[in-house]
Length: 452
View 1: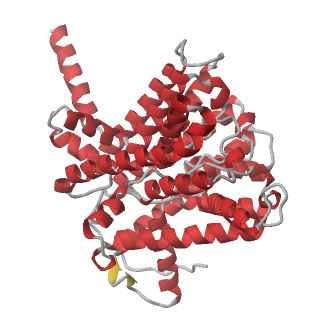
View 2: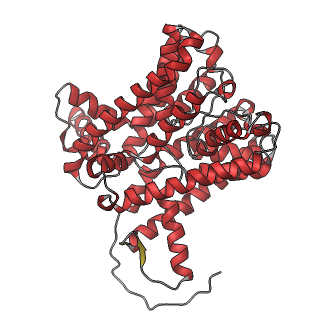
View 3: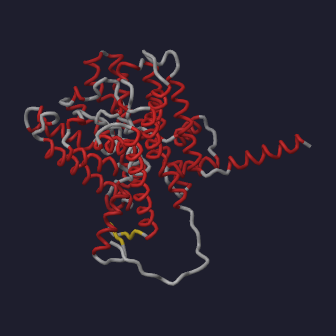
């Protein structure tokens, strides 16, 4: 009788575990890989020096969430095995763990199954099942082509500097890190010493811009190839991204042109514009920098924070509230002041459900950021702007820092890890709850409230 009860209890537990919502299960999967990555960093041959448990799990969390914030110097602490572990975690986190699993199963010719397709549709934010496998195939093609091409181009700079073997490895590492918007570098000073290198200023931004627009957009552009045939999502993403890219570039150049700590140290307008280009596009979740962030003016830091919070595209390697969310929020604001009840863009209407989703995503993101700033300020001593910059960078999974990451205490690290995790997997879980519909059984008379 006892065995029977035990078997029934185990069966019920297993059934409950299998009925956990896909977004929550994916969040658990990310947490599991962070734990596994932290354990891998503690392997005897992975590090050149001693790495604490706190350092190991923080680095693993930053890699899996493709953030790039680091409490250790990858250039001096990691050996080849440690760099390889870091590279794998970045690739897993950037691709999406379910996407990577489906690619492996497809290579082994193992059917994914209905449950796997449901989980994958949640991770890629797709409602149509029949498009999933085609999109996954496209993702594999884009990732392979972009990362290998990026590595080949970067090798023209790194191989002469580091030699053939090391140069090729460093080129591949930076190509993967850039495409996945991770921001990790094998150099102690990051890309700061290479600020004037044209290859770095062209290839690295090209990789993280393509990686940040989203796999759905890339698939749409490759298939249709004409603006008139693009979906509304693709048009909003491409238009919004272009505006934000030029805004970031121009604003950074204007604000930092004469700052001797940033652009002012470079001779000539062409070189300053090139460095400003790199720093203007990197805040939208890339995390690389070619000038010291701590040397920026406060006004520039606030501008960078705004770009980090916006982020890049859905179903991409990037974080933030996403460009589409920001654009729809702006369109809704304009429609309100114009007394319009219909929201339109590019000859298509945007439904009320989408507007409500944008409001919810924005509100929750603001709450998460404010709570994060409060908790980090309560647990850390530091300048308020540095604290805010760190939290925005973590939430947007960007990785830029004003030198504050290395000063984090264990409670501060826990706060940043939690925010990085929410920034990466939070929209998945939030999307599940937003997709849950309830039909009201009772209708109440309309009331009036005063707003604004």
